[in-house]
Image 1: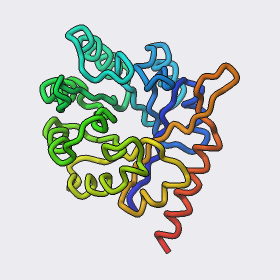
Image 2: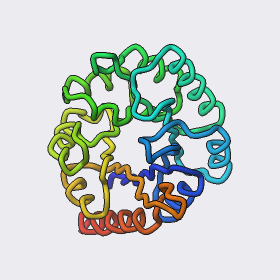
Image 3: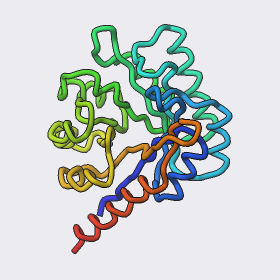
Length: 234
């Protein structure tokens, strides 16, 4: 049976540790999740890497929700990727677009080459554009290992048919990660169309109104997946 991945998008080191305790088997670390997510501080990357051997991916995004990069932005992106590589991070999560909202092939290929042997996920910048098959083929052409997507819709519930198409179109050349509103209520529907990698933050606001991972929201999803897999193997 294919291994199922629950990737917790964690807004802090403490959120990452909560996600791991709740059963997540991969972490994407970022900061400023309430704004859409940005590259975390180097100190947090180093701290989390020292505390766990889990598969750790780092969001590389200088400014939240901005996927068109200046020369200075791109320099910083390359610097951040090299830092991750030097400090034994397993992968980076990236996304580069052109002014016309197409995939920036040149920048993406350069990132993939510099990141090796780390894994590269193309993130939900993909969901801000709208040529499903063409965009997927460009990301595959660039050498990315994973695509994180809600099916070019605002969430996985609206994008589920497109996610199913992407899984078929990918022809195992790239792994599709479903993300954007994933939870224990819709994970069975996603599993049924062939999704085996699930991305969620499972967050709620703490006393200081910062988004932090909620143990129960991750754990409910992990438990539901185990139930589905057990039924699948019967």
